Length: 455
Image 1 (spheres, one colour):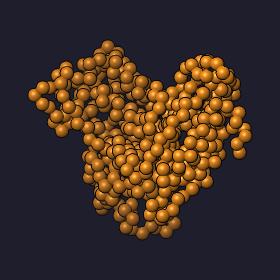
Image 2 (cartoon, rainbow, N blue to C red):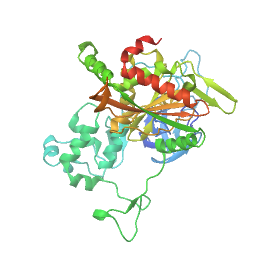
Image 3 (tube, rainbow, N blue to C red):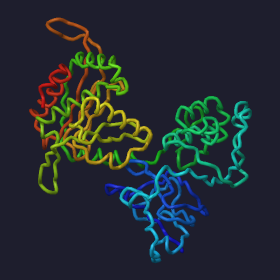
Image 4 (cartoon, one colour):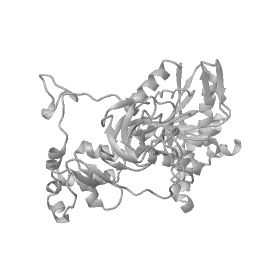
């Protein structure tokens, strides 16, 4: 019988998702919990497992198409028992359900599932001679005459997107790197060596839906304008920022801090071989200072609940750390950050950044923050006016650390300076509380030993 799989709620009430790519095709045999497709929500890229064991009948959406939660996604030809219409014979085990956020329990089988071959139209079996690949990589590309089965190269969604932009076939890159995950550097190295002939021969043609031309044209024969669909993370971020900017009355205050003592502390920590693997940096110290200072500034760790007519004060810190990715700005969370040591915060920040860059941040890791930090200093920027994430009453932008002349103990000396920019919701936080909080953070950064006096 035919069983339809509808796009489930992927967590936190998201209403739609874009199909990034299908990993199966009509006629493919699939097993329970086998990954069917990658879909991009407003917050993350999610792999969808199969709820059935059977044969793919129909794909109800194409790659690049955005569909609503609850809409048919894929149809399977399954036995009635697999579709849940038949009775389970006595003595047999209950069938596992697909492991999907908000969908069901994890499969009962243990261990890492084996990767399967993928049906790819227009590609013959990939057996690439190393000499051909070295002498003329563009000639090693399979022809488009045969429909066959090949193994999908192991890589992350951002790497696949990067390869697509460069017109690089990941199958050929995977043939070079062997049995490991293909990285962005692998793609760049391959593209640089192959040169423009491969890029011209494999790049997708530009369609009129992607560009808009006028009689003046553009430089180097390019279209004068490029139209990019607003979707995914950028669409969600834009909506959230507009909602925040026009709902919460923002106030931003600035303070330049002498962080020389903090930089000296970090230098001494880097010399400690037992801490070498933790890579403790200025952002981790700022995060620790924020957690300590919030204890005396409850308004900055609160939420305005308009519907209930209440102010919700949080007695914990779910700290958001803004991360710039190829898909846009996201703010993953460090849960219960106030409980972590400086080393624990440094490890958490590094883990969040690596996961975000790989496009593997889950929707659950992006929802429910109580206060956020944005490290604009990594871009060489000193100060800014950050916009509050919806539902939060405070966000701190951390500027670049610069060595500049500064008054110190009655004399002018070269010191390490950093500018902090604090935006807060004026409904919850008045100017005095915002200023005291910013000064508390500054005091800890100016004299890290002050942290020993707090809590």
